[in-house]
Image 1: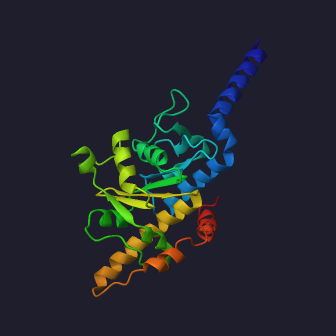
Image 2 (image 1 turned 90 degrees about the vertical axis):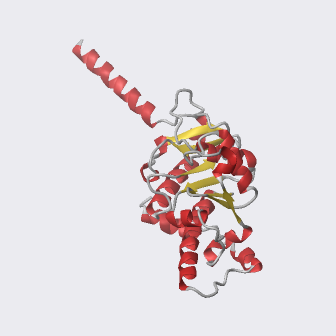
Length: 259
């Protein structure tokens, strides 16, 4: 009887462990590689100072454009594959009873809804970008690695959409207003809050988020020097924007986080 009881207990333990490690939805299982890449993206953005305890990165489900993958409510540097949640475009978890995750998940859902070309989204509170979000000085491409900024960076004023708030995009209405402000651009600044960056590929959105922040830092330093600042011309920005899809940078950053 004791042996049977012991074996039964062990079976329950094994079932519990499997439930904790198995993908929570069929889509997460089918897209295991994409989910692992999303985990790496979280770690890279945290390691390189684009995200800290706050901010997040998501990808659209490669097989279902009406769904996307985003980590649960936690710091990006701690994310693992088991923390990834599948959402629909109403920001509802596909698994009933699953934690709702980030308060600002509506940033992701409403941008995916509005922009069929977008496959990855980053929301960052990087300090260098917050500076430009609160200033009348436009963020312009000063650096060839951030040449994509030549397409334009919009600025979202949450008071125009929701009056006086806690500054968070915590509902679909504010998410839609942000997506409308973003329009067809690669990035938008959120006044006093940070930025959103979008791209057709995960590696590209990570590269854009990193170099957008770097460009903000360099532009601020150039402005502090005084005198005239020379920015990339329109054609220069167009030619430089593609880079190599930031693949060399991705490989380097991935090695730095040991993935």
